[in-house]
Structures are given as structure tokens and as C-alpha cells.
Length: 182
Image 1 (cartoon, rainbow, N blue to C red):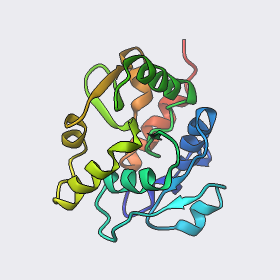
Image 2 (image 1 turned 180 degrees about the horizontal axis):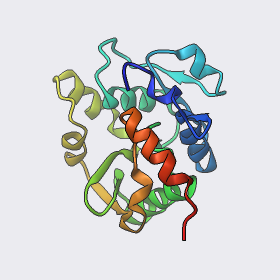
Image 3 (image 1 turned 45 degrees about the vertical axis):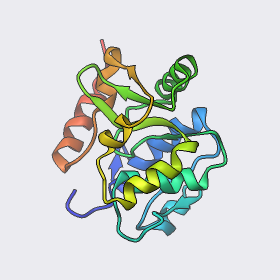
């Protein structure tokens, strides 16, 4: 996104982070934002802002580790800010599926591929995640595969996982999602 902070880029007149917060607030409390820059701006959204424990910006797993350390609940639910079509109802499916499966990690699967950053993870996995990162590992999918994980099928709604990684993708998503559905 040309060095811009993705969460603060506007989609339909609102910052992308606002959509993630809306979805999370529908089913979870408390809600926090994981951000390593523009923390003052993110604080204006009314949530605690969590920074990575290590200053190396080690990717999404470092953010997950910080969230797990901050949380006081049994599970941590994550949603990246670049998927503005994911709703609280869709996240609730993940939570319900985890309850039935009794797994340590429930992760969204769109029917074709894993959506590894939309997940519900048991906080007791924090020491393992910390060791994984300290060993220099960063691949989300590899860490997930080490644990009792349940893939939650969202193939009936795969379009909600459209994410924004470039200005062109943002324009396409805005144009597509503004059209009335039949």
C-alpha cells in the first residue's frame, strides 16, 4: 500500500480498522488493536493498543503473541484489518465451531485455502508461540499445524475474505461491494 498504514486506509469512507473493530465488538470483549505504528491514532478508536513484545516487527505471529499476553480470556480471536467484509456473524461461526470441536485453534478456511489470520486460539499456547518466534520461525501456517487445529468451512461465503493489499484491490473491492446483490 505504498508504505501507508493499512488499517487507516479508507474503504467506503471509513478506515479499514473500523470494520474489523465492528465485527469483533459484535461477539467479543474486550477488544484491542495490535499496531506498531500510529498508536496514538489507533487509540482514538477506543480500544487498548497492543505493540509487539519485541521491536523486530516479526509479523502477525508477534502481534498474536502480544495479544495472548495481554488477554485475560481463555481464547484470543483475531481478524486482520484488511478484510472489511468479515462480519461479527461470520466470526461467531468460528467461535461456535470451536466449541463443538473442542480444539486449541479454530481457523477459517474459504474452501480453497486457509485464512490463517482469522482464528480463535487458546491462550495456553502462548509459551509454545513464544518459543517458536524465539527460534526465528515466522510462518503462521507452520505454527498452526503444530497444534490441534480445526479448519472451519466458509466455502459458502468465500467472498468475505477479499482483502486489500494494493490501491487497485481497494478500488475493485469498493466497486464490487457497492453493487447491490441479486
